[in-house]
Amino acid sequence: MTSFRSTGKLGELIALSERGNAEDVDRIMSHLTLRSSLSMTRFVDYALSLVKTKEGIDRLEYYLFNGTLIQRNYSFLFFNRRSDYDVVNRAFKEGRIDEIQAYAR
Image (cartoon, rainbow, N blue to C red):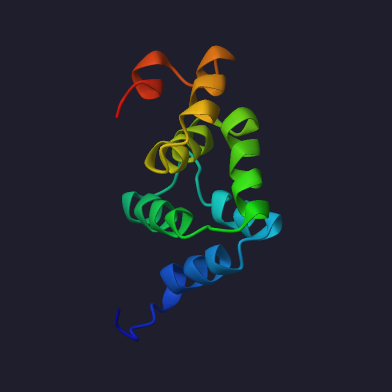
């Protein structure tokens, strides 16, 4: 691991994800809108992958079930990458994500 620290918006998102409380996850997820640029969605995706706290993970689960479509999609990616299939299956059964997403591995 290098000592390289990201700056700008990516650095801000990384700092939020490393703290990982519910408010930090909310701030990260607020960048996922219909007008989000491709680069912003990649920054958010990377930052979410760094969330490790129980509070942050619980907040991402909240977004999986209650967020906008794009927020649910990125929450799904988070849980799928963690192989947390119980929560993914529950979201599918409740109609929060579609079958293609739920069973994409």
